[in-house]
Image (cartoon, rainbow, N blue to C red; front, side):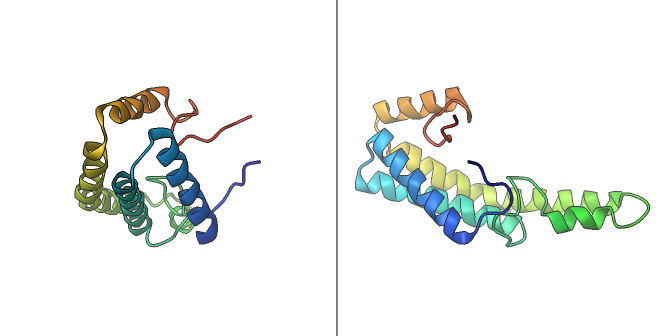
Length: 139
């Protein structure tokens, strides 16, 4: 069953470990490739946490934490100026995080053998619900 709402640090750590093991098995990663994949996940997590204001489980990528969203609707009118400021802050954070994420993704992908790269492309073509490399199994 699916749980909605923020995940605990322990839940996220378990999910991360399962993802690392699943991808390692499916792509038949060697130790160096597994280390690069782990670095990629850690980089994405750190940048996402920083972008979300240091609140793990605060929402999906690009989502605003509940408290920030609630602050926009405290008065009689939606606080459009604050909403735009939040979007600007998130955009700047994402722009600042991009080089590290791009470098980690490039390091991982470039470490893969051609057959492994082809598998990654196949997984990406299936999309998030296609039960690919990192997708959840529903049913």
